[in-house]
Image (cartoon, one colour):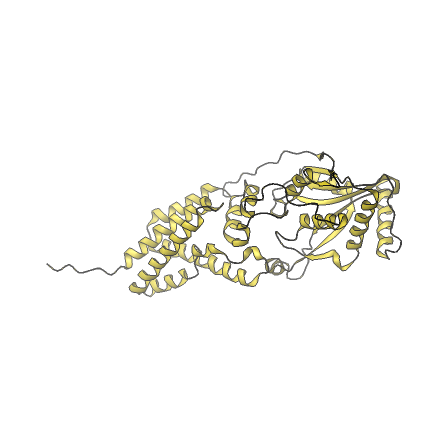
Length: 377
């Protein structure tokens, strides 16, 4: 019965907000506003956790979570919009008990950090949250690093405080790629895929808060007006994250496939391997130009996944030995340059087996097509 009354109260409050903001609901002195950090999951959308804002006011029977991480699978051309980078995310509000229940069923931890700010600032933040919820600002274009559920919370808190009080604390001297890397433990091919599809942007130093646990850690070290900005973190749900195991999604199948290519020493296998690399490279180039995601642009991994390998395959099929040899040598040079460039990158060791395999294949192609020098006796 309490749950039903709560939902009716929440619906009435939200309906009143949507009709106009000239009479915003004043929060009581008992109101608390908190940053919620949710643990990691094993679905691709939950690898990095989640950030939300909770407003709890027992006097006004409010306990609501504002969530900036919503998107609609029913959006027309959803996949194309997501790939292009113009998919609209939006903010929503829902009862906190329901929010907590979802994370309980998913087995994901939830942490709470109460904002230690004045009642006036709490009211300002509450008004901003509701103004966003019922305006065109509700929608925003998602950006992996620059605009997501965490960065939006950072922005609205800083706007409320009137200064950039919440900034990155720690790990500012390592790249975004290095920060992301550990989050893929137990998801080998997802780690490999993101390693090769991301370009130069993720190799920049990670100076912005863009992940939930970065925000949680930074808030613990943030002060505002000479006082801590948040209270000590409170654990609302605690679960041990389970690292998934898979018979195929692991490094062993990866090494087995590449080992087969090296040991097969077969022309058809070599061509298929190079064809796959070239098609991946073509995809990277198309996505790099098509997508608004800056993380996908300037992808130097195309030195390994070269679209020009497709020309090499055609030349080989056409039995043009001279140009097949030249293109294989050209790609060996690409490979050496790529290997040197990659040495200090976070994903060097995960692509190293592919570098070695490509080296074997290209050397074989070069040897098969090298013009033999006649020996005159």
